[in-house]
Length: 430
Image (cartoon, rainbow, N blue to C red; front, side, top):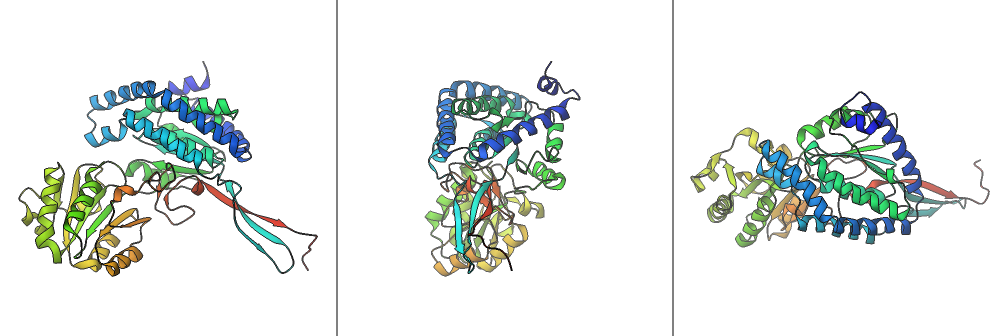
């Protein structure tokens, strides 16, 4: 029996398997770092074709995953995050096409200058090496992470959740087919072939230098564990407690459209609005219509005293609600005393992910955009635009909320570092 099969059965060979995967990924990373753009793009084109052709197999595998979690009592929001439809699979393929078409970040000279001694210094983008992506629920992350790492010259080790195990395997087969057609090493995109949770712990150790950076995509407990235990750098956001603030100068129709989309388009995504803030100056005209709209759309509203007075169906908000990422059709709401009070609430309860203001007052909008310390800040637009695809990146490997290296949607460019190339003509240092 092979090591990988033993690992799937949960035997003690899991550490051997994981270290073998890391060594193979490291070798693949060296090949990818110098692979020509044309070869990487051939692989991406083949992956797009394989995803489209493999749609029936991907959907069949996903149906098994969904049936399993549904039988275990998963929430509707969780099931939505896990579920693939034909449209979602084709959107995955469309994202690969966008990544194929974007400029290759590897080797790009971002700055160049000449020193008084005649030396020329260039700052050049280079791959990170081996990226480990640990994710839950959303099987499309396997494709997004795989192709973004390929475009940026990185090898990737994918560890999906047990709930999406079959879906990820079906998607991974399509990605490997693309690598094979382009003559690139199959270990460039590796899927951990086991549901054993111990595999996560082994990845967090860095596998004896085999992993350069870890990207977690999942719930608060997963991300918190990764940030606490990882021995290598982490691109992470702990949670998406996102706010939409309705200012005194907000148009009601626009506010209704944005709020409904920001909360209810897909309540389970990290860009969904979790807290609605409404300026007291327009509470008399805007509060009741907004609350009624949300409740009538199937959203549970938990509010402060003023919000509860607007509609008897509103439930009282607790202190915990202001700090909660529901990932469901639930929203907390409160009335605030202008933009300064809204900013104070976001400072106290936000997660530095995504926050939006709806207003026609340019000065207030500028104040909000300048002072909110989040990776993504929007004016008169839905928080659900917090997505690498919507930024033109094709896809994203996650939304980073830290301030080191990458922030916001992590696309191909953000998966590179840099080095300095210096060109001389015989200079020596005095």
